[in-house]
Image 1: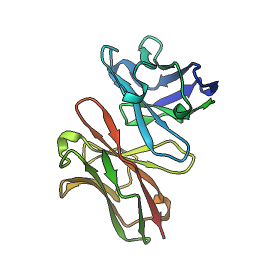
Image 2 (image 1 turned 90 degrees about the vertical axis):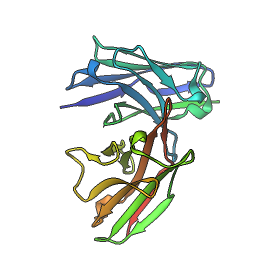
Image 3 (image 1 turned 90 degrees about the horizontal axis):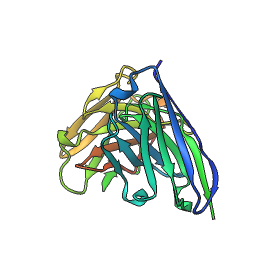
Length: 113
Length: 107
């Protein structure tokens, strides 16, 4: 069974850091580009970042450039999102997805002022 | 900017078309349109990719196309369980852009 499980969410103060993880199983992780998408409470979906299969190419939405870093460890079948200098507006459910075809259940991140 | 109808209502058994428009000009197959369904409290589920391709879990009543310069998701024979938010995505050279979503009510 193809599965993505996010973890690492929680409550953090403005300016703080969190590292999200996404554990993949049921498929060859290194074959797929991966993406982080977030959804603020009551709002729509927003692309955050994506990473190529070998990690050589990464893209970010402008609002997180310089603060968030996407990475992956193909040996551990894992995707990561390091979030630094966090802002209240980063509060959202964060989903990892396999190329926008398969989605995890999400992890909630709350940034307090 | 990717634009969708904020809300639509359809009667059970009827057909409805949701659209996805690009502010930079007409949507083409080169934007590789995707469509997602999201029900309250659940993760999104991908229904359509690359304009019209379906996943094994996509109900046959959903179909994707290009219509009048927009990407379109057509629901033929709406069911009560189709009430949900629907999002499209268009790929540009660089960013991935989600539409604002359409809240579909089956009533």
